[in-house]
Image 1 (cartoon, rainbow, N blue to C red):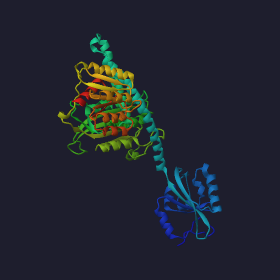
Image 2 (cartoon, rainbow, N blue to C red):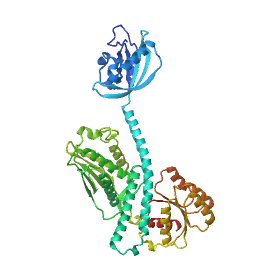
Image 3 (cartoon, rainbow, N blue to C red):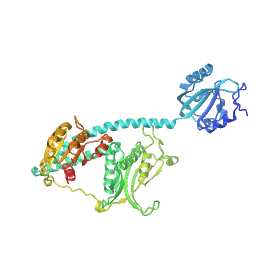
Image 4 (tube, rainbow, N blue to C red):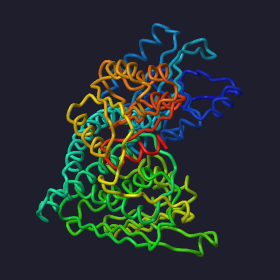
Length: 520
């Protein structure tokens, strides 16, 4: 069987039925050109370009290339045919389809000989649009990773500052304060420090800087966390966008979710970001955030209880034909700078991992409503941990000797005073080397060691190795504002000694809790 290219005038032939069958199997465009025009195109070439075979055979091969690249392509192709280059080359370029869509392709170009013994150019064109998106996302992820590392370092330093403020506030003896107004100021300082620490913790959690495990989260706490993330997000909104909030209260903390709080915050943040982008051009824009409790919903399995998180806006809405695609990876109607098409995909994946559901209702020009359904679980009241908050005056540590290493002199002094007030005998060191030297001298009288993971001269994990060599059963509390290296965490967990980690900033009561837990 003889296949003739319709642009041929001199009887040149492509004469292999087997070649035609094989070429049409491949999902990539395969084309052959000679004399500046295409003489063969497989079915994939027709699909990718939008042109029929007849249209392709009447086109010069450079007509599908961007105008700026046409002279280079023409010169390059003609030289290869004239000089009979036989090596195969590969490079990337943008082509223009019949619908005037710019499409990035990877070209593999080589020379072949047809039945008449004369050379022709063969081109294999692979659409790399998806690969370009992946590469762009990878570059963005790498930038975000670098920013996350920087933010984690800043958060560590910021936590140290908060820690000093917190310790100072706790060391102020309330008995010496005669004014209710002064007591109010001290209370506000403590509350502000606590809120600042929670903000840093949320930032680190959203940035995945700290490992996180599944845990029980009561519905009341979840309401508080969502309220905090909305408050945190509100600062990014133009003043004309109104945020309305409604959270269903719960009498007991026995109901909740078994989840990672950082992931729940992430899905809420992604939905808020989506709503913000939708209402950004609406001078009367609003975003509504609401939580509800529901059970035995008709559309879901019977006997199940659900927490429903609603995020609604009165923005531009979503076109009906796009509703089914909004959760697809990389699908976006926003500009390249405004979004990467992964926000709602992340929401769907998080919800699915908790065996929940997410729905979207939207009307073009009127707004959008997202509903997230998360399964509620119960926790036995006997397992409900309630912290015993007590006053410093009631905490007694007489007979207990603590060896503490802290490189920050202010934190070291404040922590020493706080522990001594509670009756502990405190020995202090400024770095890891001094800690080991002092421990060698008095290891038999030290009941517990407190050290910072990041210390000069000898790091915390190295200190642990030396401590274990001296006395294997030494209880150790490690304090840190941020542990950036997960290998160190794993290494710490492998030690035989009794070890606990206490994140900064901590209250004196938190430290006492740890000490009592370690020596009991």
